[in-house]
Length: 147
Image (tube, rainbow, N blue to C red; front, side):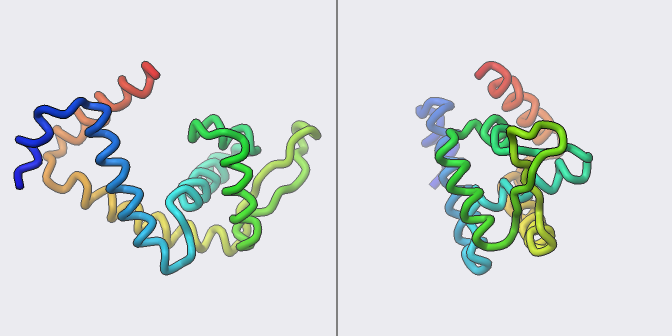
């Protein structure tokens, strides 16, 4: 089936949802062998990138980054803490917050997950030219900025 013909009559929001559903299924299936979900791995990767930049992260930062509600992020963080991938420690910048840090096990898991994420992204856009990929990113960024 040629998705181009089918998608021509579907709105952009629906197309984005189809891609998101595919990515969820692909990631969750791929990550199941290490007992992780896409949301958990995305959180770990975000924490790792912030750590590399020397940025302290608390739960509110994660809520904003992923546009998620407090109970959802609490659940993700609780599961990551249960798996010993993160720890919550007092923030030196603001005593009202607990900063979230990766453990050594969390860093190791991020390395595995980043490889999987890079492969998934490549599989997702491998039929696009470099120029098309740049254009797609630019257009999606404009949509995200608008919302």
